[in-house]
Image (cartoon, rainbow, N blue to C red):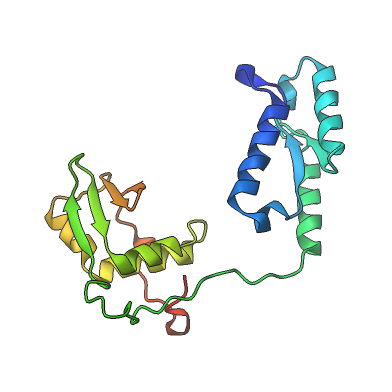
Length: 200
């Protein structure tokens, strides 16, 4: 957190807001070990505020570190503590859902179709029933999972169709209510491991 309270920020409010968002997103992530780093310590003029914040987070059972990314003050201590905690954590396999690309949804012949069009607001849009299930199972914090999503829409011809509609680098693409900036990335053009081909 910004311990200096730059731009009128309140470190306690920021700390609580971050943790509320983590708790709302995932109990699994919220239960992982956490340390609290007060950044911008070089800009602090009121030491009492730092001590109050330290007492607040330590009262919740967290270790508190002071740091300045600019002057590098305290960075070694933060890295050492992070390394120590990571070394003590058990190895955990990534949690992915397994998706069968070949499965149909009952008798729905439209299930595996993918549709592309330019929406009324000018956004390039991709839709599809199977695509929706795959999209909902995608881990957007994991590059492998994103690659599988990209491969799916590319293999379905959606990227080529959008290009025919005028899609260029920097244009906005929408899947469900998620929008992203399209960019042709070599990182996505790869041949996946067949053993993990259906993993999301």
